[in-house]
Length: 223
Image (cartoon, rainbow, N blue to C red; front, side, top):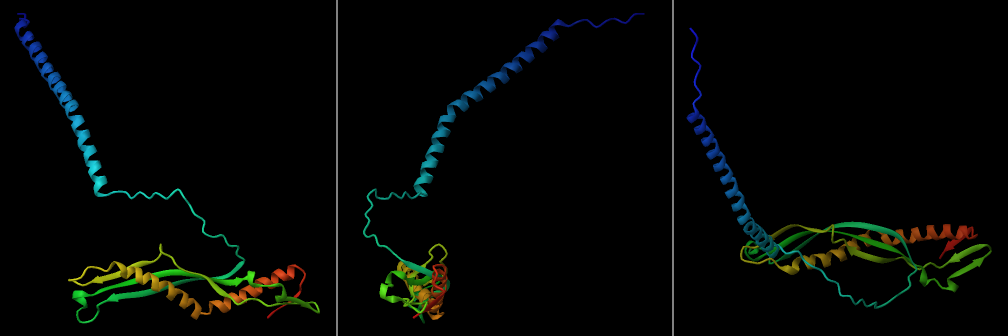
């Protein structure tokens, strides 16, 4: 006996098609609403972001340095300095105010690591014609004394290592400035005590002797 074939149910088919259509419409409508909302909110987001950026710039401004277009040359001076030695010096400077029993309350103290350099040599412009003479094939030169040309603090390498301020006191703004000023003098003092001028004089004589030898003066005596 043949099995009876299932009959095609048109109503069920139409319901399935209708359901799929409704679901597709709902999804399409939801996506459309979402795009509309995003399009409407996007300008507000951009405005908020712009405002946040402006506030950030106000709270953390970038300094603008504008040099004056007018430059005045005060002086032009010819130099004949023979730099023969350079010292690089590091010095620790202690600057303090109101130290003692009441230091923890009213004191201010800092340790400043100062790094600088000292350049010394001989100023050849001080040599006059009468300072050089030739006798029996020997060149006699009265060389000026060596001197310090530059003694400066390297601000990029110098820094405050430690600072302690009293509970009832504000930090003194001039304390570091004073430490830097003292540091320059101490750096030069250290170089002088180490004999920078004697070494500069010796280096100058060695250099000039070689120079005079190349010019044909085989014997040179510095006075």
